Amino acid sequence: MGKGRLEAFSDGVIAIIITVMVLELKLPEGDSLSALAQVAPHIGIYVLSFVYAGIYWNNHHHLFQAVKSVNGAVLWSNLHLLFWLSLIPFTSAWMGESHFAPLPVAAYGGALLMSALSYTILVRVLIAHNGADSLLARAIGNDAKGWASLALYVAGIASAPVMPLLSVGFYAVAAAMWLVPDRRIERAIP
Figure 1: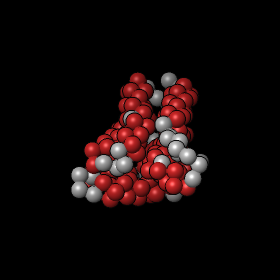
Figure 2 (figure 1 turned 90 degrees about the vertical axis):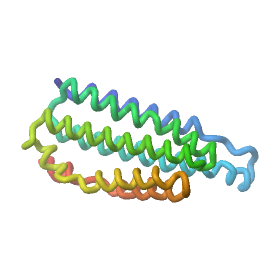
Figure 3 (figure 1 turned 180 degrees about the horizontal axis):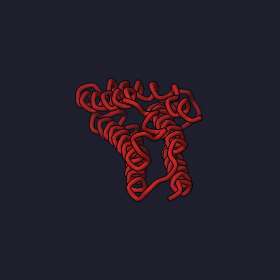
């Protein structure tokens, strides 16, 4: 089956995720810099979460440029990814509202970890459907950056009970790794 509907649906869901995140932003109670400083945690986590939504949107776009078709397993794998991404606004808001308390920080990391794992599953299902010799399979290779991201999320979750801000640092480093676009697929597409 064609992949156009899956791409359009995914684009719409990611757009809604970003919309929900921006609607969760708290307005400052006043018009001073100190009032703005009070909502700084919300703004910071919004920026990080927006970057993550952008990273997934960008990589999802490249991923589907490298495949010819999808099947039912791909559709379900894609929904699995979208489910975990849809939890990012909730965990973002919780983390900002709690001022980076350990459990919300770990939950945010859990949503990031599960999003990354579900993306990995989606890639593997796409490769299984399109073939081990497909353009996508050749482009993905060993996926060192993907495995490094998973390790950073696990480190962030593990450090949340004792140093929640260190956890956020791990999440930010993982995001920064992906700000440099993954050119594997772009290079592989003729």
